Length: 355
Image (tube, rainbow, N blue to C red; front, top):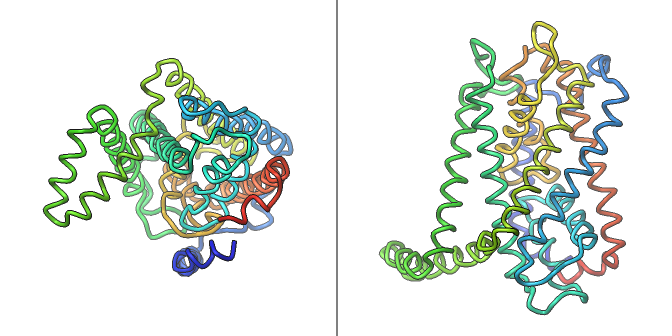
């Protein structure tokens, strides 16, 4: 691990600066990281109990769907994928600049029980393909909600506690859809027409720098390797089905917790399931921001931004603050607990020393 720190010291320092800037902006804007005691007045115990099974369903399917991406190379037991993913997902949350994304492929490729064909490169390409598909599914869901689900009219001038307009927040959702759709098309072209795409990339970017063209072509080729699952109809259907279950369970957990925390509209009606998809989508937009360990600040901003589209300011800064706090604490706590089990299952911290 000391070698890992030395290799990424620049990112760690930048992370500290970004985190400090985000927290300062939140403090200046009055956005709550820790709610007031009265904000918890509407919290019901059943909501906390209901969130745990939803989170476990979400995490299970988020983890084991990986087998569809790996099946052409190696068959990995679901229990092992779940254990590795528990460690990796916790690392993604805790480490800055999404450095934790390297943990899952590292643990899988260095395991003594796997085929030697499962290299760090092949495991990493599957993770990147997974991320692109996740971003596309999430952004499509968010775009549908932004179009179909009525928001406040007129929209608030700004997100509660932040100098950002709610209209700009909604626009960001459509931008995210464009980014992930473009990424999916690009790696799809490399997968289906690799020779032509390779030559085109080298020719276009080679005008700037031949070395840049070579590196970009090689990088996207590795991304395209992760899409081999879509050449196998049964695996593709299984992966997409479990991806939808994963995101559905995520939204359901957020919905149940928000209802139990008293997040309501101006007329007293509770948050709806489609609105929880909107909150989840806005959270997905903000966690793309690199930097903060523990997603501190960006996590809260994302959920507050989503709530500001549908709920009055006093609800967002009252029961909504309790909801955001509990959602963050519960997710962080569950990640730490399951990661501890995952490390035990995979042989302890000695497996991470090589990083």
